[in-house]
Image (cartoon, rainbow, N blue to C red; front, side, top):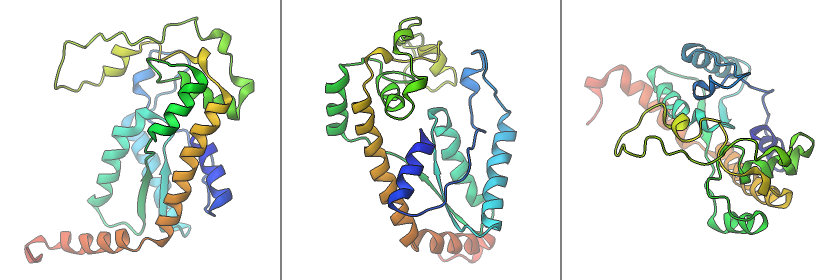
Length: 226
């Protein structure tokens, strides 16, 4: 869906959309048939070299539009790691802020989905709005999308197995309740925010200036004014 969001957004605010990019973090689904899971080192290097090449070809502001929740932690750290050495570009990561009003309207069209997550109510709705030919709602009951809560005994802790502990089928929610109209609402919410971000990034001078100042000060920290 991230490509769909991007293509719709640039119809309203010009930007260049990179070709399909498949090399993401998917270790949590290695037990699923058909999953192609590259090593952490490789996905890091491919993304970094892609950014380097985009910059070499004239792009000095780059926005990542992520389409997979499994990338969230990776992208947070990857973004911070950009400060490890000087860069000739600034990197931004688009992060959607869900509106309770839009969520409520979408829920009214699709019925409540208690575990609405991966391939659940919302995601299936957006697919119905864009690629209905690949959606088979009649198959949604073949596996369980209920949160199995297998590590609910652990409080105040993070463990990488958390997703598998909750949704081992890589399916969370009930896709049978999906609705294309609800999908359009959710898509438009995302696109509107992405359009806003593109405009802001184009006008932004603060991040490049701060980044340049940071790189200079980090070369000689003992001479940096405190």
